[in-house]
Image (cartoon, rainbow, N blue to C red; front, side, top):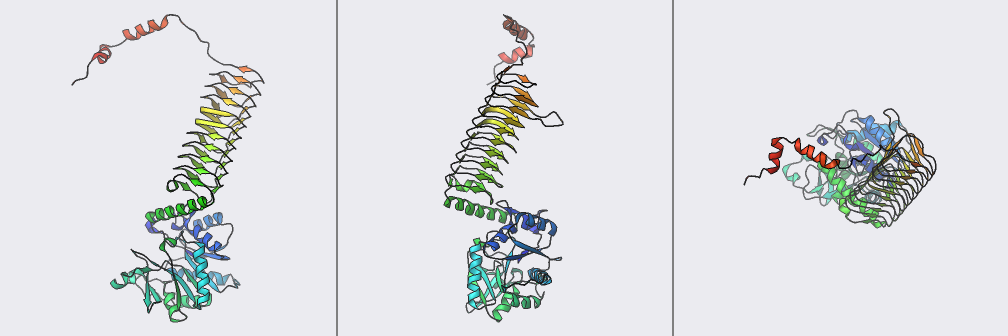
Length: 477
């Protein structure tokens, strides 16, 4: 069971707390994945606030789990949430061979599957009906306090119900339990709301287990169970998760020049022998193949970078593919639908959109290539623009193999420049160019001999007294 019904008012957000993201996954998604990796076969998520939105997001991002939902119409405590889940499971007449139920909170994304397997392994051997983690922290804050007697756990006291002396206890409850189902059903039915908040506390089942078969406790570091209550907590979890993700890639053979100064999403795939410089962001379903080099400040989103490609500093690449040995940047922008062939080159301040660039073709500087089909060994000069939009529709520019486009050319689509043709610099091309032809479209140049000095004299004579004084006036001391 994953408890994910709360609104999370301290987040001060219209987004339900469990849908806030760490490494581009919702908080609750991390919890579900950890449970799945620990061997959980079926999961029931308890939803409440904005439940349809949470349900839709989970169904979209969790495709490997047997996930079902229970609904807590009124949020009156964690014990009530579990009661709703049990009722939902019973209504489905589920025939579970495993008598144990693992209970987790949906706002604790840092929990690892290794810890959950440890809880299952040790609790099942202990003879107890309930196992739980405890954590010793320097500043326990509002966490529930672990109560012990003779070294044994005898209960949990929620912070608002604690005495001043109990609040001094530094051993706290992170809220992860493994409970025998038959015991859980009885203990949940016996809960009462006789407490400061008038709620059904799930923590009260620990006292019931301690009186019966005993509560088996396992100490673990709080970094495994840190819960998100506000934006500051969210940032702490993001930082820890980034450290884990980067370390995982490092162990797999990826070089990070500044590992604390990058962002890597949870779904990103990076092959061995890739080098990542400082300030890089890798997002979405990005894939980077072996030997690629991603330099400072580059942002990749749902991008594919093939073997030995080189992305120079401060490039933005979205939903595009960079071919083997291709070079991009610096300061290039590859928009959605761009495909660069092997050994191609996109230089500084070049923008592409929905354009294919063939093998060994290049656009070195200051160009816009939108809706283009560019063949192999094509050279595109600085300042070239594909005029692809007529105000209503987008049109395609086709440059066949071995075409040369001179600097400062405007190609007004739809247009085709055929194989081996040459477009002269400064041309505006509005018609197809045949193979091996030269296209030139310029205003006729007229040189007026001796006219420059006359222009200067005219300009000087048109100056006002104020203009002349402004050039001779000295600054005051």
